[in-house]
Image 1 (tube, rainbow, N blue to C red):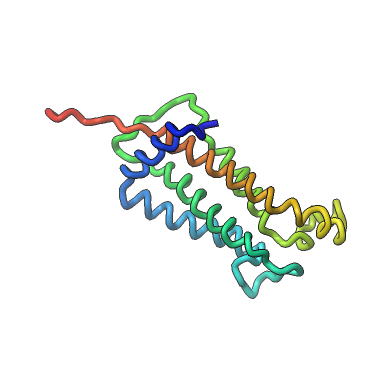
Image 2 (image 1 turned 90 degrees about the vertical axis):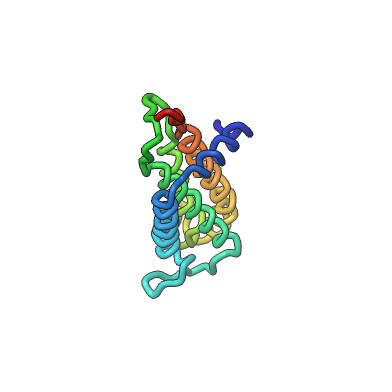
Length: 164
């Protein structure tokens, strides 16, 4: 995993070099993620969907953190003129997709999820699935953080010589 202090330092240095275009993509990506995950799971109130089980307090920070990490990961795909392309690196994009999908299951209503309902029944969804959802949220956020760190650590700045 890329979660070493050096990776965090390199990721922070990369974020400081981002321009307004990348931050705009981060903001739009975070908003889109919050809506795509939050509306169908009814964490974001909407007349389109409702929940049988009330939203838990931790659903809101999990959705917020997911949106922020997904936005940052999306922002890494905006090309900057000084970036070097690196071939053959594992960029973490699959981790981001898996993390986002897991968040959907983590913050969703346990008895509204048809797959869980078929596998465990209504009482099983409340008794077994609901207690696992916070752990699933932590796992999904870890995967999204790892994806963002990998994407950020592979962006490198190629300094321009002073004579150019």
